[in-house]
Length: 243
Image (cartoon, rainbow, N blue to C red):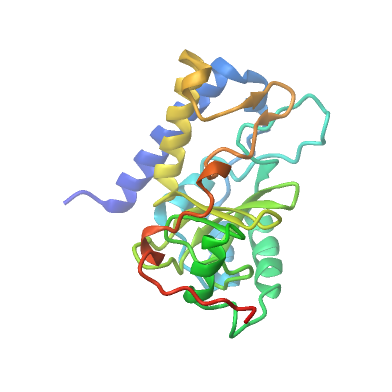
């Protein structure tokens, strides 16, 4: 039987190689923003500090690129990802702790019936099996755009989700999107969209600014789809939290 760890490493390396080739075609100036690989002990520290076992593919990814460098707005150094930057191991710990510190249990709003109501009213948007809980202890935050949009690994997904799935949350807009069931699948999705953009920009869901990089709306739900419940909430009876 093949070693699953080695297989995950190979898949992640192949996905990153595709991304780098795609970026060399459409946004070559961004390639220098990738950080150097993380050392294994630094990754182990993340797991110990956050009391979580990171997926093997995400560990492998950190061993290729330990995040991306901080880019000053208007510097002419575009980001290689649809965020300001991906975090390195230290930032993952720091920001995830801050995220978790923001959680305050709410017996009214921490209720799928209320979430169903809020989706019906288009007050929040849920695309996929994700619970809309800011500060969830089941999240490991891995990157952001302007402090408003975050990507995180979700270890407490809603029914039908996959532990470790990658979620994009825009807290200000109350929008939650499952980008991919795993980190590898996220990288592959991004690689495919870079390849589509290189061949025909209109066929790709990416929008790329040559000075700033891909826009962070990548993977988010179109505004005309708001008000539609995800499958896991479809049969839940809505409850108005304000009455």
